[in-house]
Length: 278
Image (cartoon, rainbow, N blue to C red; front, side, top):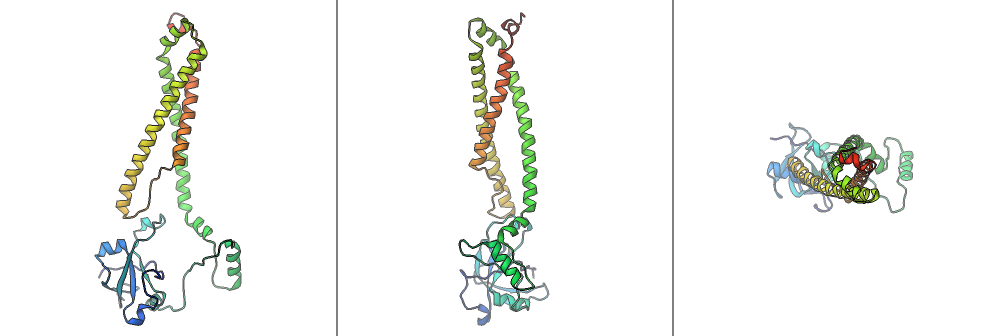
């Protein structure tokens, strides 16, 4: 018989009746949807469960199949979960009136830090923590990954800025003859500068639009691949409006700077030099 690790047990309030099923002989359990798909389980099937592969002594009936909330901290572990009544779980483990951890919901406006401090000081043998502190401790790995991605983003932005400046310089160099003719017919340096700057802005806007489309397509492909690989609804790649606004603003800023530097270098050159006769 395949070994099934009982990793997470919670009280079923929405799926199970108020009276523990153990009092009726066969306890009811709820199994995770991935586990049901992998083992071919359906509501009403009977399982044999236990704390070890050689102690599958308790029979249980599948009362519900549920979809757990997507959690990035557990999605890579590929764990399978079963939910039971607390009395049934205590009987299975042989540890009555003992729990590893439990949560306390607070009323609106109550300070979680003060309640945690009061509970920790009231008795020995346990420690109370606010949920924000637990979330902060469990997300250290994701913070490291986030900083790593931020460093990569900074390097990419610097490299793209240099690349954009080089492109604009090459583009402006191709307009030397045009700029010389415009100077000969009396067009001012300011007009030529603004025209080249406007061209740089248009290029930056088009580049930002293409970048947003590429990022969106890459995000969709990433989510499709990893959601199918790990059989989860977790979103692995997300392009938010804030990211789009920041990217477009950054693209415009870099385009303006690169275009202004290239245009200023061109308009400062004498027309005869631009014509190739100076």
